[in-house]
Image (cartoon, rainbow over all chains, first blue to last red; front, side):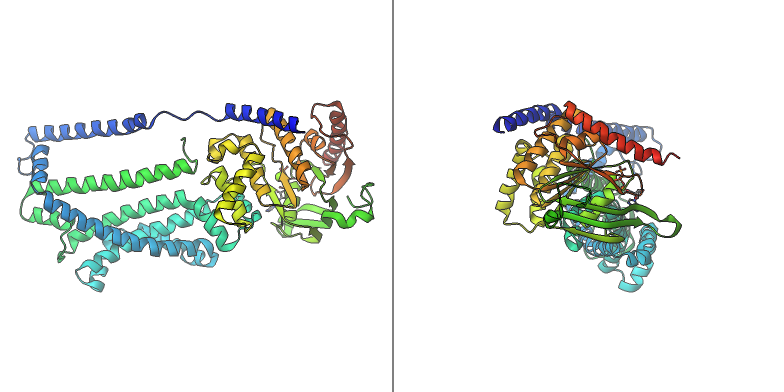
Length: 284
Length: 262
Ligand SMILES: Nc1ncnc2c1ncn2[C@@H]1O[C@H](COP(=O)(O)OP(=O)(O)OP(=O)(O)O)[C@@H](O)[C@H]1O
Ligand SMILES: [Mg+2]
């Protein structure tokens, strides 16, 4: 019997060694493969911009050269940084509230069928509302201030987050639910240990989309709602336009773009990849 | 089968059955979309035995296991199970967001077991039992199908079931891996005394593993015959004794299927 067990063990480990593939190429090489194309694209973009300036299609003060924009940004790091911070913290607050509200609504809809048939299509409908359409009402309710922006940001982001949970839960394979039930997981335990983890990748896509809505509503808000004490990027954009400082206008836009890339691409993108890899949804 | 068909299992032993089904019927749906999956099954699975169930595709084998596992309720008839069950599926049904170790630990946790440190140690021991100690930190998609099924077996055993239900667990594996897993399962079964109810449509596999093979009719499922397997263990799937008996089982199955041709 002991001999048999040993033979079996040897045979199995031989088979396992054949089955499990070696680790893929190094991290450094992978990072380089990701970063190099982006650097190249940026260089090409700046080049095209400079060509446009050189063609004298518009006067220099309307289309300034990329280098004078970068120069302006370098001269005004303080106001750009503080405006970025104001905008980002507004966004984060709204996003956090949207996660709480959207999350609760999503879980409720995903687990109670009656609620789902009553609210489900309304949530999808809300998602299609352009957030700018909420501003007049928000201003009527809350006046020209922070609260109006917060309201629109939350209304813009929450439906995507709720929807992410709902479709995530819908897509949980029945086999996993059955496996959970045979292991004794029911009700909340089932939700906590099987359904929600299984739904996470789709839920995360919902979060990512929610942030995109949040960011859009936020900048629209900062441009529309003029009487803000804390000056964010939207306010700065508007001011530079009003004072005919077009180099500044470009500088703020570049800042908004870079922030968007960092948060959306780098932060959400990295986590998205991480989750997908962990959950076995992409090649390691 | 009940005492009538299974000679070795007379009424005196009836109380020792781990699973008893009498007249169990299961229908899905209603009206003209009603499907009768199982029709009046009588079956008695003695404690500690290894019982294989074979039947054509769609004859209600999975339904039978779901009933025993308590995932479904019978439409009529009586069913009793002594002790806890664990169910293993054809695909591993491991949780992809957990490592193999994490999967086993979750089973222990849901069973209501012990502290975190004890859970980790126990899970590790279970994985070692199925010779997967070195792969505890791997995720299910990082190992082969055969390894996933072994991990699923470890997870099922970690539930400490009195009755282990297996639904074509090796159906998707290559022959070499399957042979090794037969051996592994047989060793685990004989050392632990767990009752096993094993569903397959591979008659050789059934004869290789079972103390007895129960043949189900095509849909709706009924017990056609219960065949004892007197071949001494350890067995080999290539042996002529296994092949001969498997041929007999296959004949019975074929008879069953061809009844539907007319
Ligand atoms: N939840 C369900 N709803 C409706 N019909 C079902 C359901 N589950 C099973 N059935 C039907 O019951 C019959 C038996 O199904 P079951 O899965 O038990 O068969 P099986 O013997 O396991 O088949 P296979 O060999 O393909 O695994 C089939 O006709 C199937 O379509
Ligand atoms: Mg089946």
